[in-house]
Length: 52
Image 1 (cartoon, rainbow, N blue to C red):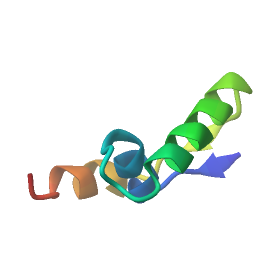
Image 2 (cartoon, rainbow, N blue to C red):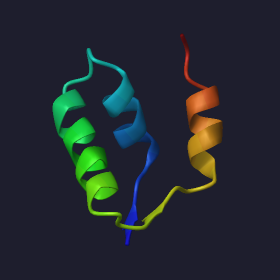
Image 3 (cartoon, rainbow, N blue to C red):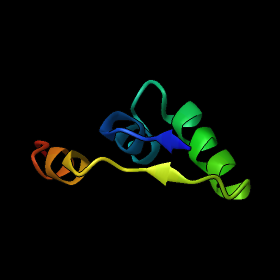
């Protein structure tokens, strides 16, 4: 089981982020292997609080 924090989700979506490819690869691997993940409750708040 893995805990995925806000930085990974943001990096996976935002192509200009330095670790974009690595974050996408990690999420893809977890999905393909059907591994359970934990998404902390604060992820939603942290993403919503980001400046556009």
